[in-house]
Length: 164
Image 1 (cartoon, rainbow, N blue to C red):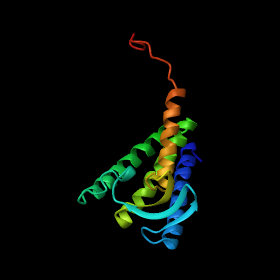
Image 2: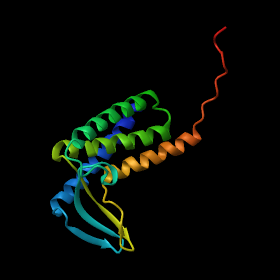
Image 3: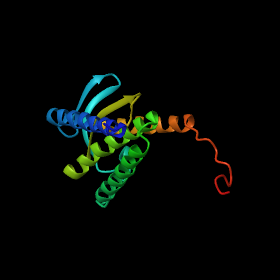
Image 4: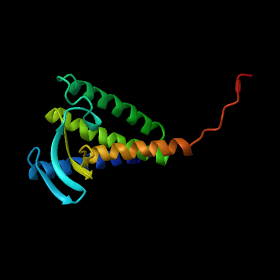
């Protein structure tokens, strides 16, 4: 089995976890309903028609095909990057999480026209925008890519090398 296939399996696991958690929340909660879990965390069910943090959620409808196209493009680019660098573990872990998260939220956009969010953290009257497992995977994946960019340095190429 190619090392790249293992990274695609990680992405598939993220999609599966995202689907299962959304299925559970959709079966348990009604839209807008909230259940307090702790003094700083609720389970809620909201639908986000926009991007991260509800960016463009109130747009008149053009954002759905736009975000579907963006998710497809990102998924294709990330898949290609995974295929090209399967040995760079930190890079590929980040990319696999991003791919799984993008595909998880893409599923919602295609099926419902919006992304189902249900994790609601809050403190001192302030609520972080609700999010889901796919959003978490994308965020952690992006963080791993940032860390990897500081750790992975390619040797500088000499100007004109190989042109004798």
